[in-house]
Amino acid sequence: METTSRTGQEEQGAPVRRPVLDGYLSAGFPWYGLDEAFTGPRWLLQPGMASDGSVEHGSTGHGHEPSLRGELGDEEQRFAVVVTVASRPLRRSPDGTGVLEATSVSSAAWLAGSGLLACTWPAQMDHGLRQDWLEQQTAIAWELADDLAGEGWSVLTLPVDGEPTDFHYRESEYGWVLAGATRESVHIGAYGRGMSAYGLGFVVVKDIESYAA
Image (cartoon, rainbow, N blue to C red; front, side, top):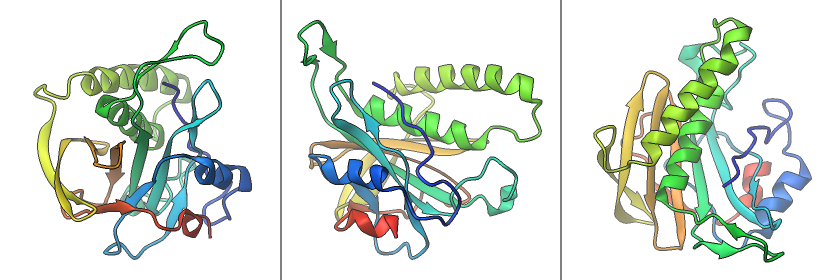
């Protein structure tokens, strides 16, 4: 499945672009975010599209939008991003020439892991080394996402729409990642830094436009 860009907003605090919001509004599945216990800023990232043009996944952000330009120090990088992935089986492509990849909890784990890496690579690293580092770490993230039963993951139980739900969870020096399934035919992934995953709760977003205010 295709990965998504992080450019949901042009600048921190700027209104989200209409095409981004339109992608969320056109999706045929519910979006998830943090519950009302979180009272900070909320924002959207660019949704991911399948090859047939349908929206396949998207991410709702909470806290300070991560910055790679150095405006925020490590101690100020406090955010949690919730990734919602439509649960879809292996299916034929619209032109009948191939198949579209099925989505799974591993898909959510991969998107969350790669999302965390995209916004937390070492700022002091030489520019020429960053791409090599990102490719290496992304490959590791994919291997971990493909082995959710492996030693790299533990179990963390958090509420989803008020129901206790088990998530695959792991921590690293860059932050934390989790992934699990819901009763709403979607998979949830999440990643964050500076905000503990323990105590978070996930709910269906009733008004996705509130994230674009």
